Image 1: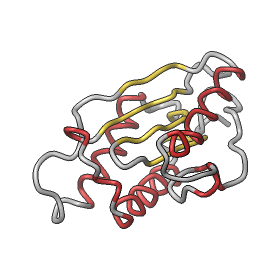
Image 2 (image 1 turned 120 degrees about the vertical axis):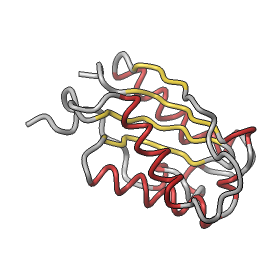
Image 3 (image 1 turned 180 degrees about the horizontal axis):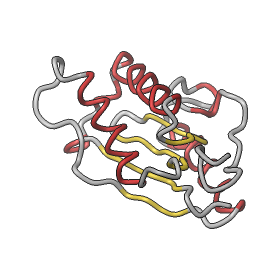
Length: 148
């Protein structure tokens, strides 16, 4: 059930606080929604921090995790190419394969509480660039969003 669900962290180049600018973070929300609508992945939870992203997602059955993250980062970079000076992303990302429901919910809590721990808000639901203020994320049903 959780075999294709991952907790992912990707960081901006040199930890530049790119997403501290509201329009940059809002655009990332749009890009994530676009790729989810295209069924590249199912996004269970996310937080856009000033210099990194945490994601809890299940790639589509026909897309590798690497390809899903490449689409997300590359799609965003393409959108900001006229604003950007230099590199935006560190070239890689960190991932952890989610093992079970307990692991899923632990990472969900970690993602939602990240802005609180960093002092960006007092409650997780107050942070606008997170899934914490939306209805609770559903754990994966099966192997991925393209499964019938």
